[in-house]
Length: 257
Image (tube, rainbow, N blue to C red; front, side, top):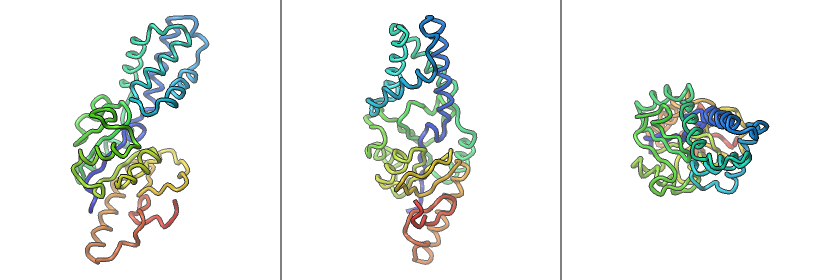
């Protein structure tokens, strides 16, 4: 079946989350230092590590709850546990104020919307309407809303397909995580495109349907797939094999993963 829907991960795929989170934590650290001299020697790296410590034991919990617990851990460093509510509010206000789409996001969505149904599907707490992406998608899926578990749980992708109203073979998922956005999507029967913005080495055994460095490449990749599918229908023969297409060509990757 031809691709009819393109579904996007949010953070670090469409949205520059890292900059926003860092800005939120910088604001928190400044407030801690204002409130108590005990925070003078606390570093940003230590506050960042509090997320890692909490996430390690609570990865399947809602992201908002993990961040709240991480902030509580940071406050405990300086004896300010009673300030959790205002500090949490400060963090999220700054985090959302700084969360913006990458430069390639809106142009790519504008092109793709002409030919495909677009979806937004995330484990995180980046709500499209709070991050510069209001009214960009036909549907939005958020983990822990409506009983949807986090990726890589297959039920997450079942919710995506239900919202799209299409079979897996008609849907491509685009994301930055090799495990959650590529392997898990493919295991659920969807096509998967790995957005590898920083040029990381491909993990062993990972075979995305395509690998791209920027969302600007995605429309051409999908156009290639569409042309090759049309050629296959006309000739009755597979369009150069049965493997998964590689980035920018639409042709099978020939065992390079």
